[in-house]
Length: 341
Ligand code: FA5
Image (tube, rainbow, N blue to C red; front, side, top):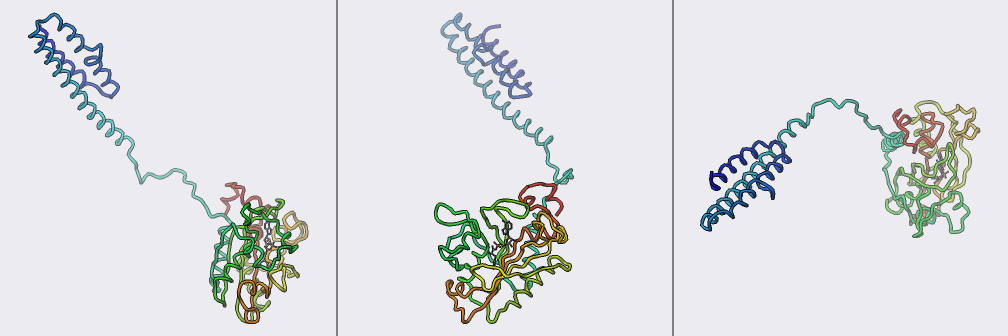
């Protein structure tokens, strides 16, 4: 066999081996056997030295053509292999959208969210609008506009997280009263649920971050009687049973007179426990008639307008509703706790 015939045979054998490859790795190995530095084509070309100049030219050209042709064949085979691998993968990994999921773990609403939604429904059915405000508030909206003067001792009633820019993490949802008073034209009724923050020592009924629902009604001739009636409607609809409450005088710079509405502890039935600090009663719903200074500070005439406001402690209400004996469960992320609701 002369060199030219040898090249023809090499090509045919090479093509055969290459087309038998079943993976890209195998293809690379087979390609190397023929076209690599130590491959069979290179070996043949080393024998060119033994030929005449004329033959060198024709055989050299042929060797170049055939090795180029084999390169093309390798590329074509590589593309075909890719398609085959993809098709096999697509077949074995097919998504069956109708296959049952096995053991799905659906989420549930957090008990605080659930009761918040219930309270929103109760109040919207009484014609209240739902308001919102930011958790980072100005000192003025959180305190100043609510009749807390700069040196007012009541500022210390709520231990405040101050931010370096002079703003505060709101200590109560009463800051949203201010926003409503400045935006809405009376008469109006709003509730404003939200998260509030205080630098407090944590125990069974105190958290550093908890939830309140603010309520405010502004109109003409609004009385303490209207306020107490609204509180009673709320509590009877939330608890769906007879509950004992008591009204005590309270103190807040933004309402006058101010009241504390306490609820007979439903965790211990009034006998005394860690939630009610063994008193049988729990502070739940401070409220009062809007102080004339609050109207003045927010651009309304106290000779014309009257109103009441309240600030419900939502976490504590939820504790009473479900008999939860420690407020720290709410932020615990404990699934066994959360799945009960
Ligand atoms: C206030 O925050 C007033 N802004 C409420 C108010 C609004 C009064 C409108 C009058 C008119 P107080 O600091 O008492 O008040 O908090 C209100 C309620 O939030 C409490 O009755 C209690 O239920 C709840 N609360 C207070 N501190 C905490 C705490 N650290 N953890 C959980 N709940 C709390």
